[in-house]
Length: 450
Image (cartoon, rainbow, N blue to C red; front, side, top):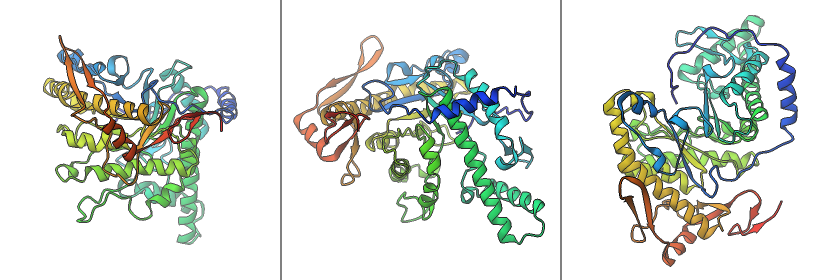
């Protein structure tokens, strides 16, 4: 995910008062005593589509009103990137995140093991309070750090600089060490520091805004990008799941998982989009179970365009992304629109037309399908999740039972119809219940504390 603003200041922020450090240390101590709820983001709505876009710009600049409020979409006031429903922190907006520029220049030390975590947390303390002033904030709190990855093995290509500089740091400290010793020490130092930075930042956010769904954008990743393989299955390549298992500390500290399901242009017209998304979302559920928290909310990040383009997703790709996520039992999907896609009046008009004619009706369809399945199968106390025996099943309403109609006078779309007995029977065959916290049973009909 690319930031809203391309401007990144390389200057360190002004000095932070040292007396803040004991304050956030106290918060971290108290944090472990509480846990958040896993109930739906929106009451009685098992699958929510969150609009994470600054399309208010289209109205202010060009007079084009992208009205997402008529659908079951949670949008911040003004459709901005920050508000009571959702806040995203890019790397330059939270603390003193260490990284290297494209020219190889270090910022804030460059490496997590070469930077001050205390300074970062002290600055983050103020950044979080400024960005989320409401102490009862219960929306999505997403941290977008993309310069480096916490597993040594995942820092390839342009990110290899973090391995190179980590080796150089150890070599400078121990010039007489053989290469294997340097490699092992560099790897351990980097991974331990990366864990401290990411886990510590999550803990601080949860201490300050404990009801927020804190997590990192793009985690977990499946790295299933071998699209050109003639036998492409969408599965995570060998070794990836084992590496993700080593990030149990991250899954355990997160209050939501935000994997990316952006559709690469290479998938356009290939018919491989559904298996690509299937295994990326499935990996999120797998690591949640492995971390001992199977009801951890999974909220994939999706786009309405093929990644890096202005070509909107056709209806079948919406089914492969949003529909696939809902069918697996995701809590919702975050729809992100790049700043580049709102720069002209023509692009804004294209978004408006797409929302009015394609995205809006589909969102109403899939959110209604998830809600009706929850009510029919799970007593309204859980989400429907697809059975492994029916990998193609989606929570798309039967067109013979339902229709989506515009309200006369240009009002919101309305859903007309009711589940037939056949619809209910098909749901029971294809889906099972994933109960909300405090409920259990095949139909989530039993309440209690376990």
